[in-house]
Image 1 (cartoon, rainbow, N blue to C red):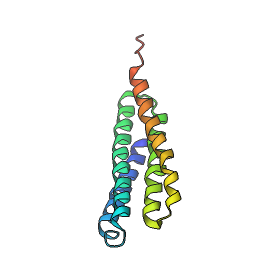
Image 2 (cartoon, rainbow, N blue to C red; image 1 turned 60 degrees about the vertical axis):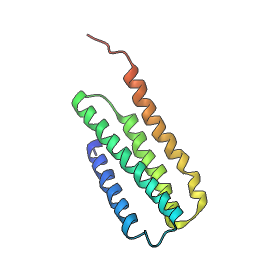
Image 3 (spheres, rainbow, N blue to C red; image 1 turned 30 degrees about the horizontal axis):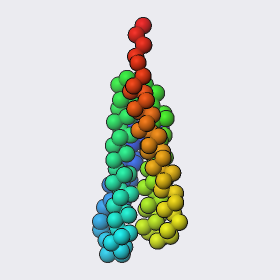
Image 4 (cartoon, one colour; image 1 turned 90 degrees about the vertical axis):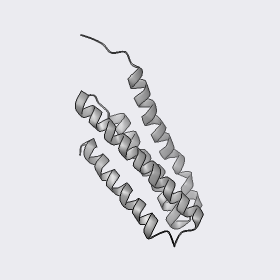
Length: 123
């Protein structure tokens, strides 16, 4: 599956989960857990958009973006996924998974910064 499609699926899921939190969970979660849910949605959607931009860049340039794209995708899964699970279950140890997702996000952004700083080789 191409990265543009993955970003579309992740964006769709992020909007759906945001709406679910705003409507179905608003009266069921404590304000603290609702804030956790909203943080998950924010990072989910921001990185789905970043993945789309990266995928469009790859399509236009022919550059290999696998490392950055995988980092954003895994970051959404572990960071946002653990926060969604924490908000729904209240099981606090799930929060221990969240930094792993943050590390994937940081790795992806770092990969982009390093790749952008590489000198171009002209032929």
